[in-house]
Length: 498
Image 1 (spheres, rainbow, N blue to C red):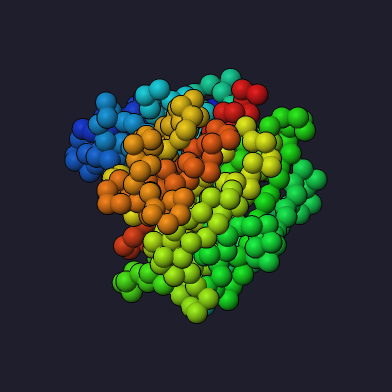
Image 2: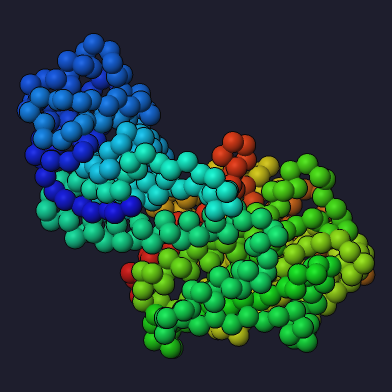
């Protein structure tokens, strides 16, 4: 899709389609009113007849509108004006794009970016419109042998801004929106690939591609033998059960001076999770290919940062392994020694994500990080707590947590903070090792984060549990690409303030 911005009047647009908004009940937006006057009240007459109420998601396609230079006019219901917020705006844009793509309009000028979304400027609205457009048009059909070609798909979309002064900001918004959308797309593709294709080796290959032809980016990969020699006993306890060798993947992006401490992202990359010896139930086990959603998100974020050429230093580490039951697999009751030297009693082999992450979190100390953010589909308990709308956030540093929450609000990719108070740590007590990998009953997401917190005391750290937000179930089953928007917004804001 080709995106651009312009500033102009709707009646002067010589294009395949212009897109205008209608509030409930049958109230034209200011731009639509302006257009309606030129069209001799054609649209308002249609609304009076009851063809469109203006409810959120309603659409009406008009042809042969008097005095219009455009071939078509698409009216999109925007709901009640006073209720228009971030989520409603995204829904309005998505509905418009989906409809345009089905009408045969190969290009369109969209005036929905002029809607008054409380607290949001034109740059935000254009950026979100680009991301919502790409979200609407995304499909994963790489592995299908037959696909029906689209009839005259939408190829060019122009967003209108109120004044020419906002054109440069709009162009920057498109640049950022496209980069974030492509990062989300990469994260979705990786998560949607099956476990027999997206292996730890495959993730390493994708990371190496990010460094191609870019002098600011280097990628290194440590194999299972090297990890074992380094003393990553927790990581190896997971990967040893599979014939697919585990990998620790590191991408370094150097966009700032060498003395600037890096932001470090760490992603859980369990490319398939059977649960190991603590085998999961068979129902919905296919969804365990998404258990590398954290690594998909940090790789997507890294791609977006590289594309935007942001003036920051970024280190991305992916702990990639497959959790399988075999004669080599860890047993419940086994005790392993992590890279930090702390010992762990494995009470449940299905609590494996924290085992690969704890060694990765110790490993990143070598980069002298400014902050470390890990992303993981870590616990089912976070779904019980927050459902599928909001990611869980836990942190040992209040300013970092605050910045991430704000980034989530701005990116419309929200998170909610949960406590990791010292009182919860006793739930990880073990009679035989320094700690257990599973807490006693209750607060499962919190105790999982408390486990990770024991490996992050030397730096400022935050943990995002995305088990409920990294994928969708049902008819729309697949990866969501979250929290790429949140993470990229956090890094964009950091770069702007550096």
